[in-house]
Image 1 (cartoon, rainbow, N blue to C red):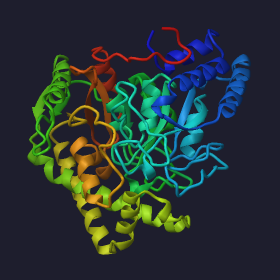
Image 2 (image 1 turned 90 degrees about the horizontal axis):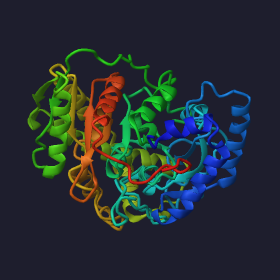
Image 3 (image 1 turned 180 degrees about the horizontal axis):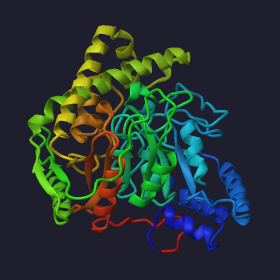
Image 4 (image 1 turned 90 degrees about the vertical axis):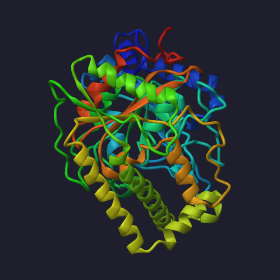
Length: 467
């Protein structure tokens, strides 16, 4: 039996356990794994109430369109919002603001039958690829508690990897879905710009670079939640033209050189092995030189830094927050945003547009790009400190850890990550696949194909499913 949300939903639908029992199992697992710091806010009553309602609907056969009916889940403490779950964004600036209604995405996730009972840990305001907010808790990787689970959706990834839940809401503005998924041996997608709803508040919109969805234990779970959430986003972008997964021979662009970024040999080997696995099905492998990506990658890093700084400065002013309550690095990003001229911001945005054009030119030659997701194994806790004011250093550290993460956010292309083996320490070897706009289904199809190689096995069972 595959330990994922689909299997858990089947067990609930077939009467092997109730939705209430599934949520209670998740609560028990959360208590057992409390030391991981994956959950920033827990509301058992909210989850059990949703589960009781789902059990009533299951008894009345009123869940036929709910693929995850009764499956427990967690929302991220950033993005959303989800009604009844008070967000603090990992920050002392916010006193857990309780939303009165769901965002469009939250409503779509609930419509799948997911029962939410808490919020997962994030770094303050999502400004890191580790999840260690001063406000607490410090989030640890279930595969090695001395290592980061990534960020900013680190709590989501830790909870899913530990089996507390089988699927969790997550957001991605600079790799924040894909990096934690990569750190914890999970599957995550940053969808094509405009595919996922961001309204009605657009609080995590960030000029189009952010996208919300989920971190999953399987490609099939990710495909299911994607189909449930995608499309008819109602602005601010037109719905992209979604294509069906291409049939026949694909041209697989292989990125096996990242220039000055130091990628360890095991992770490059996993990327090459993934490409070769696809080649065995008749697909063609075309090497892509780093020179074709280098300027776009650099421009994406600069654009990410400026966009998040300006967005944060505006948010703090708009919400009348006390910036003195933020961590030193967060305060520095706020100051950077306030000091930035319109001309300077425009220049970085313009460079991001040209970066997208350069990637489009690559996609004239290939149907997808297979790349490293991380430069090495998950980093030790403390690798992304907030006790300084050097915003450029923070961006550089994130780029060194995940060199090709922000490229998809700034350019708008879809990108997926999945584990493709384990290193000598038993940690996941993740790969990333990028595709042209609207080719999300191709990415889901390729992830499903590579998952069948059975190169990675989850260490922890899903709460509620027998081992």
